[in-house]
Length: 209
Length: 307
Image (cartoon, rainbow over all chains, first blue to last red; front, side, top):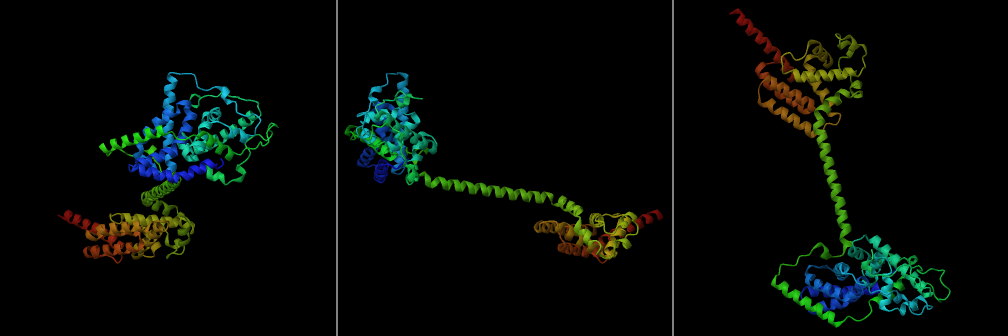
């Protein structure tokens, strides 16, 4: 997996994040807000991939738990990303379990997979990609690949941390992320050609097994 | 980060898209890093909403207040410990390997020691009995050659170099050491052979001490334990003044260690020499004393008979 600009930026944030978390553990409210602003975008993107449109609610639940248990946490900025991602994932899985009890139509519409400008290049296709389109694209992946891609690329975790969040071996997570990205690129190429190839029906991640 | 190990690999940034792509696009190649960056930017896109931040901070404030009311609540569980793993996980594994190694060495040492201590008396005798070449080599050189010195055993003296002769001698010496405390220690033939092998009745003790020390210490007896054996044997031999215990002490110590065997026989010599005024050698004094004791007993019996 290449070291993308995102993960490099996440690493640059880690120092500031670690300091903010340490201050928040001393009771600094403003520092906690700083940590929230650093972590929340990736967390929300991950949750959108997991639970779709309910991501905001699940994130809110997760932050309640994060604030409650902040004193228990030990680690640096990168560790805080992994810790919060674990909490968010548990909340998301709880949410999906509840939702499965009273099922409703998945908010997914395969038409949304139509990517803009069918004959543009990959880069142009990606640049004009909306958040929703990108997430739906990710959701077409098998769940392990989608989660691995989201944790690595969107949350900005390293391999071992992503593996710990998922409860899997680092090698398995690395392979899953690599395959997921490869499949995404291929799918973009297919969409790009205007073929509209969708060999798998898109679905919410948590509902796929 | 797994990224770091792979990030430096130039061959890793290969094309993700199918190289034989549709002809419409101008650039088919999309490397993984670009895809990651764009995906991250798109999915993470959008400003953090202030409302969510306010909710989180309010939750933080409430948690703080609850914590101050109950100060000792927070305890780090395993799932809360996200300190860097790469640093302490290998150290733990090294520590594990070292402790396992240490434990195996300790257990191995204990096992070897147990084998040694349990097997020493049996193994010492067995090794002395089974040890073929060294006694066979030394047997012809001892004082008083076998053919002339053993007149009463025709099959034994038929082959002068047979390895059994040395083992016979050692067995006799052991029987001598064991039985010298009792009256009828050795039958006449064995005793005569031993005397002949030693080159005289007064040299039997020294001869046997030398042979047995060679037989037991030679095949790997540990010095510390033989020292213990001689100490234990010397203790009773010195304190109890009887000639029987004195000579028995010398016999045991002779089998354990040569040098302390001589000192043990010296102790036995003084005690038994006082009581019986016997022979020159310590062990010889023991048997001599026994012989006299039995004679004395016979004398008293005859005295009774006379009454």
